[in-house]
Amino acid sequence: MIITRQEENYIKIQSGDTTLLIDPTSQRSFKGAAAAINTVRPSYIEYDGLGDCFWIDHQGEYEIQGIHIRGWSAGNEEGTEKTIYRIEFDDIILSILGHITQEPSKEFIEYLDGTDIMIVPAGGKPWVSQVSLAKFIRQIEPSVIIPSLFKDLKPFLKECNVAEAIQEEKFVFKKKDLTTGAMEIRNIEEKK
Picture 1 (spheres, rainbow, N blue to C red):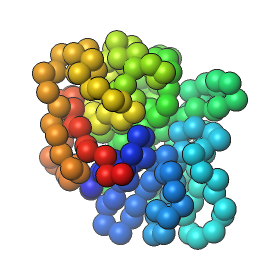
Picture 2 (tube, helix red, strand yellow):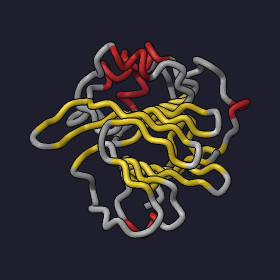
Picture 3 (cartoon, rainbow, N blue to C red):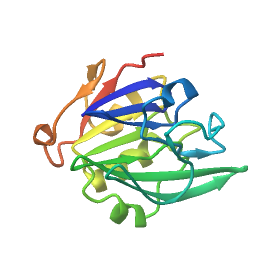
């Protein structure tokens, strides 16, 4: 599996010929993608319904090409609906916290149990505070944490009791490479 961070919370997840997009900002990337998953509604772009890309922009259960996706409402603020997703893809469980502004409720600990990779908004205001985010993550204990939506990662690292994140252009791995509960923080550079 390969995870790249395009910009902000726009993440591309690939395994073999299958690609998932998280919070895409351009329809150009839809070509060849199995699904575009949006953590906010209205999304950054409007989907015109063209092509084979399956569009997801709210809670529910979905199955696309053997990938299981489940989304739960994380609230509605000023007309913006927010959704947290759990994705089961090639025996790997990914959780996407998206644009949350407050610590998820206790039900989410059960929903996201067994998470291997967790993508989180690590920048603090206007998103969830780093203190609340670190507290929530410790209850899930994912193998890997991928921060997004940040300008300065240091406050988040401090709350996670980590001196440095592992810096990389893209995160390439297999299930056997992941250590349960390791909570490694991988800072993937934005492609822009």
